[in-house]
Length: 179
Image (cartoon, rainbow, N blue to C red; front, side, top):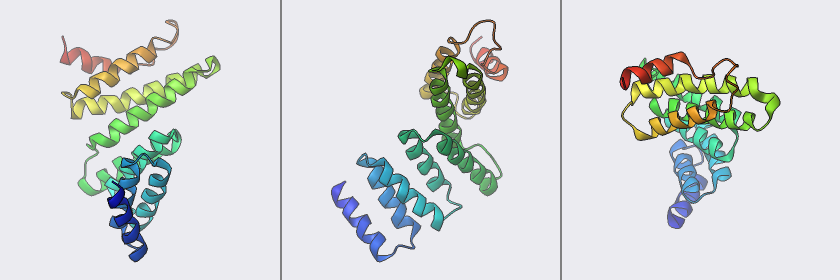
């Protein structure tokens, strides 16, 4: 990765107006674990190519990895919206998957403080809606079912008297798939 990183750094210096150079640099940074530098490079690429679904998605992944959850959520949503605009469909599985993972992280962050139970429930509900889209789009992927199990574990931390944070649509889907 070292040679690729040097090559893309050189490419960016030679042509800083190319979003592809910035994307390559960002990807190299991510592959070497330099996530903050990756976010900066993805941000440059996005400024140069604001309609790139790939750039928006990869920037969101980097933000999620860094724990910048609200910004990651916004960026995953943007990638889904861009896909909707360009393909007349919001069936962008990576965006929905990222959105569900981000809501899961927000849920767990909120569960650390008992006063945040309502916030955690809201995040879990939003996450299950995103996860439902994932299940509809790619129901055979093991990672989707693993995330569902994680959501169920998170839901177990809520008092039984509280409103169930698991979305009824998701539960209906699971029951229909596995009678």
